[in-house]
Length: 482
Image (tube, rainbow, N blue to C red; front, side, top):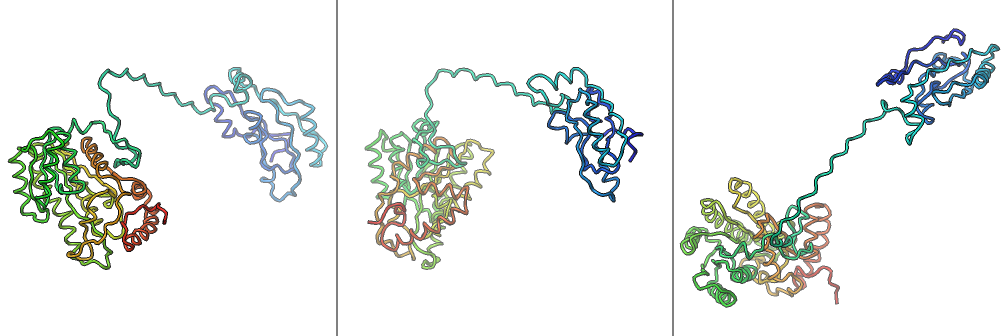
């Protein structure tokens, strides 16, 4: 290290080189005034930008201890250097500090006073020492401010016209959730305007959701083809449809159909086309549920469930879809279930068939991208007040359920059908139609499956207990015991 008397000017530091941008006339600072026997822990001796940065951003500091590691460590006496950049260091202060260092090092001759650095340009001084940003670094060291995006122009005033109805289903999830999410049952397109005069083929129309679909569609003014295995029940449904609507006898076609007899599906499709000339909407509603534990159930039951709920449905869909592709428009509505989204005890075969339907129709939708006017719509109802419990599969094919239990805690059938028609009119790809807590469980299965598995383990025990005690398995889980 050079002696203080013959101090050499060190090369400019990185900060000093950066200061030479945009007209900053910053020059190298003077050397440190440490004596050889005094340790300096890398303390900056140069001035910094602002009062708070002087120690950290100094450029002239030298650590004699790094150059002389074998010397004895002594306490360093700091110099009074926290002065503004443009003001020279007072001689007295510099002399006192230098004399302290000199005496600490054992010297007698004080070092020469430090030459003050040149002042910054007036533009930088004004920017640093005045204004609301006093003490901040000059503009050449500041990050560029992001440009503000221009405010969008206000939208044009709405044109006068008929008011639009609110949405039927809350767009909170990719599939729409109905009723449990607080929906009012109205869609962008009212079902009366969309389905009036359309030919709608409903399977499983002898009871439950299918029967209620026939009633509400007849009130709207849709032309009906109703199918099921029990022809006498279909005649009863037709008679009531004529009473509550303005349809004539020829506007409702009764067609006996067995979904498990796949060889008859083509002839049934031709019968509907011969009577009406077209099929606008196919509602796949036929199917049966299940109430039995897997360990107690014969495999023949699972084969029958898949044959009816899955293979029978896609077989009929295939024949109707060929007609819709020729017309390049149509709607295929499949009444699935929330069991097609989740899993639950006592319905392992039923859940498997509904999962199969969900996967099939979601895949079919992607194969029909060249036909944008052909809609594939999956309806997933929760527990509904219907006769589906009376016709469920049990441990074997010959056994029927003894007690269906109370159904009053479930969603009314007319409410479920109303939301189904609204979803159909608005071409919703998938709609969950249920009350809480079943709808909340659907959200869990969609977004938090780990929590859903934990919850279903607890709810599943209660479901099995309800079934074994003779009450409905879907009895309200929040109902207190009497």
